[in-house]
Length: 460
Image (cartoon, rainbow, N blue to C red):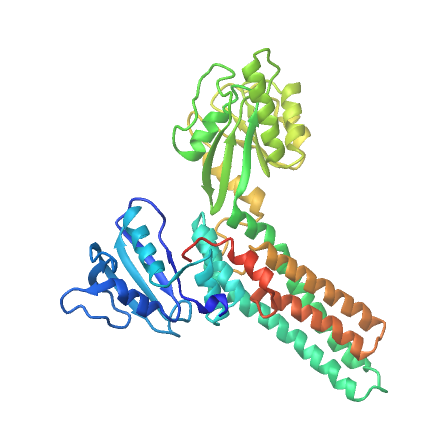
């Protein structure tokens, strides 16, 4: 039988100590297999979609393994579209694993990563874009990234893709109507309609493609490095952003010799922030290794926060650090605004041009909210409070499919301008529709499904 027709099982909750563990079973034999190990207590007989109290009894020894709650659900009204069952046992390592082994001994196979959701897709419970959203919900790092995933799970992306496909299909139908009259060319009015329709879809695809960088940041996060000379307040700025004393702060230059990594949520964008050793020439071998590591981290980063000291003059080392940061997306912080100013603002503006530095005092925490907002605006290029319900691409696969569809529409427009035969015009339109169909899984391959669902966790 095909793999998805077998009965599968897996532990759906994370391993470790916990109050409850959930073991899922899906497939034709799921109800029969569960009945082999679950014995209801008292009047708790099996009833559709209701949790029943009972015991898990080992069929081989007759020993009680655990007291559990169990529910059975009948297709097609289940997550996978198949008969399903769930056992809610006590958490921990031993009990869930023992129940899983018993289910497998009774005929169930261990589920592959994402196989429950893959079956939901194969059984028509959701399309491929919605299935991918399930994984995004599980891995969401902020409320904003969670909302984008929920929008996709609700089918907003799929609806937009189908809407664009319908527009292409209308043009295709008009072109193929001309195939019955091969001796006649497409008239100028029809040509204008086809051109306008294709350009409209092309424009909408471009808008969605351009939204990907913003969506990717909300979904995957941003690697940020704090860079600056020793004792400019890098660790203090990090502590203020995190609102906790994470990094050691000292007036002694060179205190930070290794890098520190922490996670930070700024208006819904997840950051992985690295505080690095101060950049300077030093004879200390350990500190020099820290400086080299700082520069390496800066090369790997997507975003650099440069910290300058308000109480010292701008020097060659500051300029070198700014040159390093300029290779990436960066933001400049002028710290220690509570001290007497020796930094010439005109020199800083001359280097930064239109970029506006953020002025802070890590000691008094002044300017920290403005710094957070500036970090968000620099990266997302969106106003604060962006509407998370708006459709934004977060998946690279979806972006590539749309780029391919847009390219095929562009090829169609060139052929239309050259007044090619309808048969040739229809090929590019069909190709464009198929590219969009790859997003929802209407057009797919077994290899593609394998790659997508292998990234899911086991039990989902």
